[in-house]
Length: 431
Ligand SMILES: *Cc1c(COP(=O)(O)O)cnc(C)c1O
Image 1 (spheres, rainbow, N blue to C red):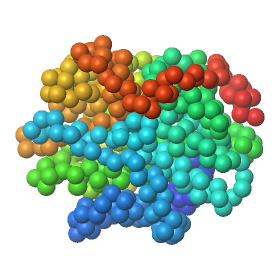
Image 2: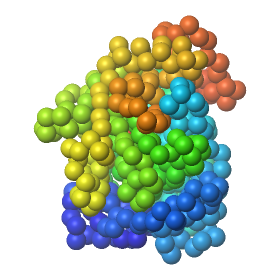
Image 3: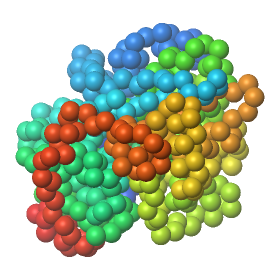
Image 4: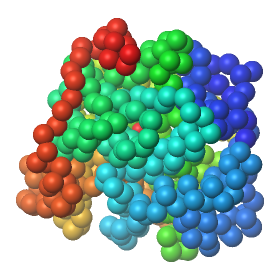
């Protein structure tokens, strides 16, 4: 597969090169020049396969001969072997697609684990230094740290907005040590993301420390996420597959980009809904046709507190390639959910005997507004409720039990460096 940079269409690279580079010059994101396509008959066959076979078929259609069959199969087993998607029925025509059963209890395990395996594969061929630099709004940190933990000669540096992620989220990556370094930044996630992008613009630095990114700007994370949309589809009863709409809680818009790619390559999903919290740059853009990011607002769905979503350019490109109109609700609907409404949805789901954390509740809220007769709705459960224990316990009368692993981590002292959001400070740390 050839990919091009969205900032320079003539700059084309192969998949492994795109993974290695992460981001192209002028902060251009990589995107496939031409997406694969599966005909109806092939889709039918794929849907009958198990999760590993399915994922192989899909990923191979993007990656091709760049990774030998046997190795790609092994990579897939290692990446997805402990993180299976599950479907929980909530109402007659609504289910939750739970993607949080992996080691760090968020959907980001899928992408991060696949990416780490690909980087490790590349590393074996090339002995240069590798530094994974990642900004996290909450869950990426843990997923990336866990995926790369103890990998030889690979250093991981994670930036996060100080005081803006949950205690448990922080414990999950700031207590590991070894090859995992963490930095709390006095600022918002968008400022962390900006620092990462600046580091990528510094050619000399990039080369010296073998810089790569663990964020969803890396194409490998995105491709991995396509697989669970196919798996979700085959987990549904046949009658519920016909008019399927999927509501995705969006922050950087990586998850929904993967879903829209799944649709583009032939998975017959009727419609996607981009659901956001008060950080609603995209809903406002779709409504008023003006791209006007505002200052990031802190909410209880903190992993979505992003006002400049990285992957939006990829969605625009995808729509252009497909000749779909971004304003046509036939493909993409949207909705913004206030804090009050999010809490209301958590209460409503509790009445339906389902304990939900704030991100899934945002997606559920918009799904309920948009779903029509004859449609079946999925909303994505992106994190395990226990990661948001204290938030949830203030909203509904439950006591959420911590798992053994989380309890253990909670008792370890976390350690992070702390900096102001200045590139010179980050650079000093990296060197
Ligand atoms: C990262 C994250 C999101 C947002 O996903 P994007 O791919 O960045 O849009 C939503 N929910 C949770 C729990 C997350 O960790």
